Length: 457
Image 1 (tube, rainbow, N blue to C red):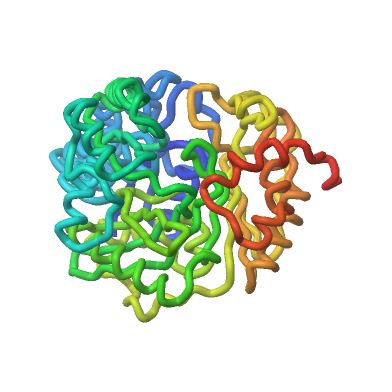
Image 2 (image 1 turned 90 degrees about the vertical axis):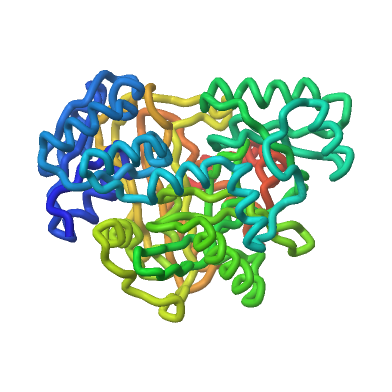
């Protein structure tokens, strides 16, 4: 096992990793920007090092500063968390070149799976279903137009690199394709430094289903079931649950087998996520692989009892998986709400500021992952996620009731958040019945915001 790990991240995920390290009796080194000098992860760590100014480019994305800090502190591994450098192949390579274990897959695997066009081609070669579309990158709008006519509108023009909905454009009509193709390519170049795009058929109003996988260095690959991530706005997830109401035992087994096949095809090692879209007709298609821990990993931990961050660390240390596929049993139902410092009634505008009174809910089956504390400041320089509220209960109905109760107890004073919106979603008939897809918020946002959130009081 490692002696000392540098955590190349901040916020709730840094705190989450710190806790796992503490339980493994591994020392921790936190890094922080000047804006995060008083942050919770800094206070929790064995030691902490300032790596640069407030802007992430000079601190949390400063690869040389992170490597220097790790070596100076005597670390033998780096955990990247999610976001920032977690899916940067050059950083994974740099860690290895400096004798530091990168807690994640190799740079080569990240590079391969980070290019969505290349990942798509790899899945095709190994029999994993993919959405109909181009066999690789599309060089120009003329080629894209010919492909779109062949597979049928609507289509998506998608960046080969990156994610989070950036570098992606929906095209409904042939006459719109040239401008939208150029827009997707320009955005991809600006966001990821890579303007390569590909094209695929748009599966209208699908479910977004992802499978958690674990793979060690001894040839063992397992999945830990699915997460339904269909409650999302502009490709940004807001609520997730497991298991999905859309899957029966047979479909779950087939999708799980495809996820394991995808991980094996990639030569994957560590924790990762295989993402699928599920059509209304029950057909599923691979869309991408996330080569890191996911924001929504806690709900999988709740229903399987597997500590995913602990497993990440063990795998990186060369240890085998502690469970075989037949040992993984999903127990009960779990739901997660992302509590973002955003104002849904004002176009989801980010709302940084100082936190006043703070109260997190508790009780059996309630978990809150957060780095907030009373008096802390939410910085404008970073992501707006400020807490994750997770509940676990024997049935979906009980989990939903528990989530409502927990949201009623949650108090975050000092900035608007998405908590009220999550609470209203919990009472929407379609969500209550599990009859929703990725178009849910787009179709119901006006209706949801017309409800009075003070009704919960």
